[in-house]
Amino acid sequence: MKKNMGNADRIIRIIIAAIIGGLYWKGIIPGTLGIILIILAGVFVLTSLISFCPLYTIFGLKTCKVKEA
Image 1 (cartoon, helix red, strand yellow):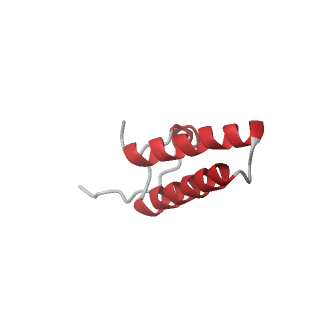
Image 2 (tube, helix red, strand yellow; image 1 turned 45 degrees about the vertical axis):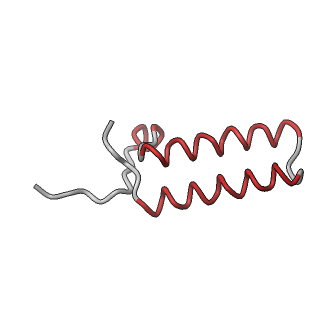
């Protein structure tokens, strides 16, 4: 897997995941919606850690800087 996520994208995803986690922990987003958002937050953290997003590959997006050879 080649990296296709830049640093800014990774940081934004981690911040969003932290906000979702905090809202779920406080009980502001309970129930099924909360569980779905927690799973989404987990996906955001996982993709941020490996710097690869499968959806970016499908749509041909790349937010990381390309090194010129």
